[in-house]
Image 1 (tube, protein in one colour):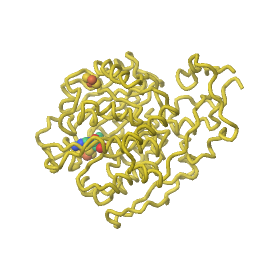
Image 2 (image 1 turned 90 degrees about the vertical axis):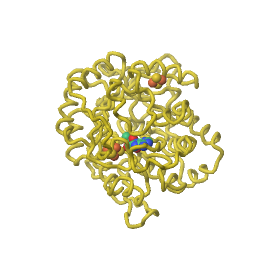
Image 3 (image 1 turned 45 degrees about the horizontal axis):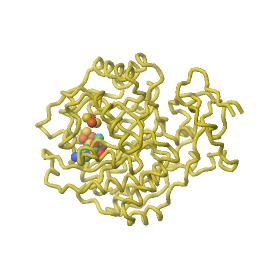
Length: 434
Ligand code: 5AD
Ligand code: SF4
Ligand code: FES
């Protein structure tokens, strides 16, 4: 059997390298729309704020018919495009997740890595991170760049600086750029949209553009999608509504979840996640964090340890061990096999091998920070951030060695979420030549 790459498509239609014939899905798995990831039945979690720390998750807000990702800024829009996707293993149920929370860590880590290997192989996708602005109007209690932290040296990168970093990154091989910032009114949705149009002009359609600039009005997300943005990250931070309102200085969890729904309705890949080890969090919160991520059917799940920052109201909070984040990573993988999961810088900052431990537990993404060192030093959400003195491109070589040490390899592919790929190509196992 021959796989014929589509003309003009460099990634999702590229024939697999000579590793023998690609796997063919058994007939009964051929139509993955029958799988639980069917968009029509997808509903977003609604948390009832008045239930205190005992939230009830209800599937109440089915997406509108126009919100089935048909507007997703897809990499290859050809209806004939076919990529051979591995069948998705069944996502773990709530019961299984709860029971595995009690397992020895090595056992759950092993299961999660096996699941990752089956679906994603030994690849670790690279994303180039650019920290655009550390101004923020919000005052989250845990965050080092919160509005009231007067010690922060504030900066904003200009459009020219950002385009220069993106161009250099593109030349060096990056095929995803993640632009991140605080909620900075100067970087309004329309300015961000113009910036992304500018990025598309210089590097074309090939790389994915991910943004993370907090809560925007629904139209803001739609305008970004029209400007060529593919993905948006907005962590829900904690699944406990009471804790969320407290830690985010009055902003309810329901507001965050509404924004995540707006992001999906805009046709963007949805990224979210949480911190592990926040003061006031319980084991039940940690389990519900995983369940909420699953309920949201995330395309990207970013999690990391909470690290108390000395210039915030949570300065005196205890530092909980990395193992909790490693367990959460493993369970997130088992709950969401198709999801991209980064091994976060926070994990690497808490422990010298934090990122490797998250990769061994099922993470499959690394995000070297391409921000010039003089700025990334000023973007300290937590103390002890690693790699602040290295240019991001130096980190890439360091990361290649680190991942090789645990038997993985870096990949320069775009690495779109498998959930979105399956929606684009519901008949998964069929090749162009058939
Ligand atoms: N420790 C760890 N992670 C933090 N973040 C913010 N402050 C901290 C901290 N003190 C995370 C939040 C936010 C992301 C950008 O960084 O989850 O969404
Ligand atoms: Fe601003 Fe985000 Fe920090 Fe909150 S977590 S203060 S929204 S940068
Ligand atoms: Fe940045 Fe090692 S990853 S120096």
